[in-house]
Figure (tube, rainbow, N blue to C red):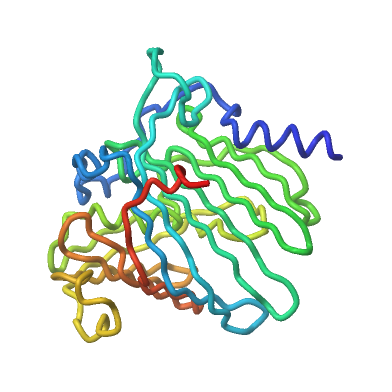
Length: 290
């Protein structure tokens, strides 16, 4: 069992599940996004955007307060392993935007730890290139990975849930993941009354390793009510927008996004009780510290 688990982690987190790179799969929603949003020189300064949020999520029927940290940074991948490259004298390099999301959620007896990594190519904010999620708590470990493989995602998982122990599957490429919305919605061509439909996979921040099923969702954009952001540092708020995501079955979501580049995510609220409110924001080379 231990050998199987180690092999799985090597495959998932070394990106070894596929040596192919992206094949063209576009979404009708691409026309509503700024294709060059991530090409701004801001992302070439050698630092990451580190945003810390006051957060809340219902666990065991009770709302739990915690901090959620979102890290956004440009990285250079190689096609061979589909991970950040260590060497640059090769001809298979390409740039991605990485969003790491980390939290520790306390409960009465033990904490939940989640780390989610979402990677999108620098010139494509609509299509996830790679997504991984891990969870650790007293009941066990879970790891999930979705990596582009032709016109599908290669889905690989390991969990402690019956029927979801170890496995590999294929998932349709094209629908958005809820986990990418905190980034992708920042790249919208914001306009009052903008509305369009997408297909959306559910959030992957859980210990479950179900096969995701996409559902219809509608994205709609309006100018934000300043009163909704009155408790947030005013230096972070400028001409904000509100983006609503309504769907057929999953919880509806609302995002408040700053109107000026780089369009910081200021607040998020979900119908299932999840909440985010920005607490602090910095650009930092966080990997340079001891």
